[in-house]
Image (cartoon, rainbow, N blue to C red):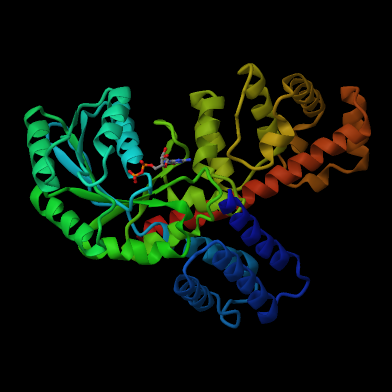
Length: 446
Ligand code: GDP
């Protein structure tokens, strides 16, 4: 996915900034230019990129940052914050309520994946215990009703439409009325995405919206439309009050930056992404973990969820506290490996954390992984409490390494390899926890 390339380019720019021996305005400008180039190449709209740079420069005035503050970290956090700001202009005010029918209208151009997404959205809520229904108000495209009917039947969702009625407003109103009577709590109206004239399409959409009074209008956008995303999203927003965006085909080779532009144009958040043609290839979208992953920083909340799966409930607060403070000791790694061992096959465990997964448990080689974990356990068993509880790996000097190797019956190289791995994970977690601290601060300010 090209979004991953965008993330890679931004991470590279940050790494180059971190590696520079002297940190000055020139290094900062170079870093920001590289980030701007990466965003433009990913089809993010020019104005958005230039606004973002202006904001970052305002936050990061090098002359104003007091000595002793970590300038690089401040810059990294400013970039994270700006990307989140674009992608997350706040949640839509809409919430589903049991016993109250809510109407959600889908708009977007033909081919964007609107009809498929309507069913995915219905199916997602159906699985969560809601009672959704689908209305096909696309009378323009021959076959639209059949497509919706087929999808709805597969997902066991009630549907409404007509082969003969040509007035979309009428069908929409009839469908909504019918499902209100049937006590459905989520009535999804699929509208046409195509018309002979663009003006007529927008007028039709406006009329359907006026007649059905939707609680939420969702704009569906194909992630591959690139630079056109901003204008397209804005055109829709000007005709109906778009409250949320769903970006489809994120599994393809789309550059994906258009999604950022669409959010900026509609000032509405991306709430889901489509990741394939099938019904359940649909994911809730959350900006902060997405940006964290985009920047190669892992996903803290996903990581915490995984910890909760792996460790007994009474031990969870202890882990959370320590990790939040960025204190990843060898003892935590030891207990972690121990708990994971007890869990048996762990599949995608810790996949949220880049690097962690590959090293501690490479995919497809469960046997070797198991042996490696066992080796780590034995070596850590030979460590003293002081070594296990320290956050400073430097205390484990050469003579201690020799003692650990002797005590565990392993060789020096293996002990050093484990310590290297520990250092890498600790560094990664401290990066993530710095970002999480920022995230917490941002949420508190909001
Ligand atoms: P509409 O004209 O906007 O209603 O678009 P459709 O729902 O008919 O979708 C157009 C095409 O895009 C169909 O072939 C869908 O299967 C496909 N499609 C929709 N969403 C996704 C997605 O998230 N990923 C992929 N790969 N294909 C999708």
